[in-house]
Image (cartoon, rainbow, N blue to C red; front, side, top):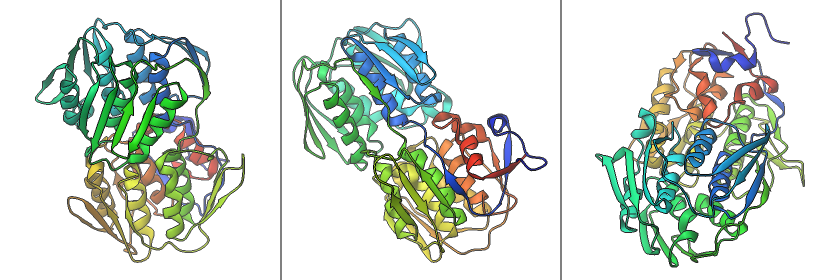
Length: 440
């Protein structure tokens, strides 16, 4: 039962800040939401497919909403069957030029993937987003689009983007994925609709697992795609997506935030739908094991349990394959004994915010000792911590990561808790159901 002064979980999203009250170990069972990454991949493929598709257990969040709106503006018919089921009538790759600006909001996925989809629109497409989205990297992708014959007009390499094309010719194209694996995924998703086979070379690809997730989904939907190597992909022209019915799998990144509550508080959390995925962040539990967690796979349909029976130990980990988890691992590093070193963090500087700066700045506010350089984040665990108001930088992962620390450090107030709407609108409700205490 909520303690006096608590506010309902459903109201937390509307608060300017929320104070978390440490209340001991977080213990319980909580399903993770559907994957944002998978939902948006399936939305694009269903929009380009021949025939109708039906997607079950889709994620309803800000990021998926702007993707749906954008695809609708390009000619896809979408209709809700119920809260978790969406029906789409595919365009067979024949898209229309929207009359106005397609607004991607804060969604880098939507902006980047629809930039490539614009190659299939005869005419022009204008894409824009919120001010924070305009600061996110996209230039390397735009250069690849120009190689494929598009005319791209920008505001000094940033949105708004005006992309004009006479179709997608195919052939050989190279993209530098130093700043995001999404650049590679965007080109792969439209490649089946090229006039001739497309050969994609990807330079400096760190999060290769996300591109593997794309390739596997494309194959399932009928495309002829081959990964000749981690940096070399071949896509057959003319093998288009075919409409199908599919259930969206759980979000391993979101599950990581639920598990982190157990890690921070010495509790135990089971995510029953954490089964069978290629999502790179599913590998986070292996890092948790290195930090001292007991990780149990509960068999078919039973999900995964993460329990922390004793203290946390610092780790040295390359985060290039799961850069979204930089804030989570930094928070746990503060609570661990010894030193935690996160390597290859530079890609996280181009996410919703500069996450390397943001998490180090907020943890320092609380008394943590942090060292930062261009590509490494070093967290010295064991420093005495104190409460303070922490900022989330309009970044959902900052809010969720900091909530784990607030569950053990009295007096922490998390500003703008509603930013979790981007990918996990139900986070506070789910965390509170597991035992997280909050007060206005």
